[in-house]
Length: 320
Image (cartoon, rainbow, N blue to C red):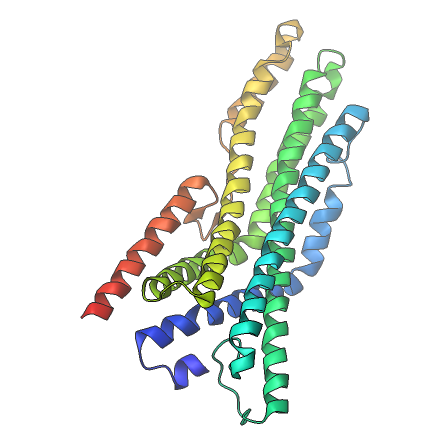
């Protein structure tokens, strides 16, 4: 409300914009997750059903390897985001609270000039930023974890294809598994494309807004907190692009894995079916949002360029 009712210059607008967008994207993620709760639970349960569940000790070891990677990545990301929130919170306590300023500008329908009311309002803002950070961590790590599970299933499929020479009758099961991986990836993309698209748009605006603020301020506690927050936003988008790129490269790599099997010892009918698998593997599994933005490293670079272009536009408007 403050950005609509009270803001009348570019400085105040950019100062309010990043927090408004941060709260908006957190609320949007929470809403989408709540709406799709049953569908998300179904997706997760699919990983423990055939053809996804491990069938032998080697496949179980592959699953454990990826589970460990997912846990480690989740822990690192949680530490990064919550540490950044702690730094920003500490900065606010030292710089804002003792001067009776709120954590961020906000329109409230009451007078908070009395100390008790100010403390309650400040605590509400302080806890709301922690809640937003926690929602982002939970949602981002869930999506990236599912992307990693797609990579895990492709690696399990590679293992099953290498065992074809011992039991050629399992080829039909491998083909079914390959089709199921594509279907699972498509479901993940459908359920979370709205979140990813909104995240990209808001991240672009937040990054250029923060750059604009940093360009107009000297080094201080507030600017350090802003730098940390900008780094978190870049990391937030980067992990989507990184894991999306991993899925894409892993799905294409399947064709090479088929070629590395002992295919010369197989029946001609089996060889023809393997060629079909290789042909389909040439079309990568790619996660997109609105059929425009693809989750890969090129999209991350494009986001940086777009943010810089918008930043230059804000600078030109300010100079005029």
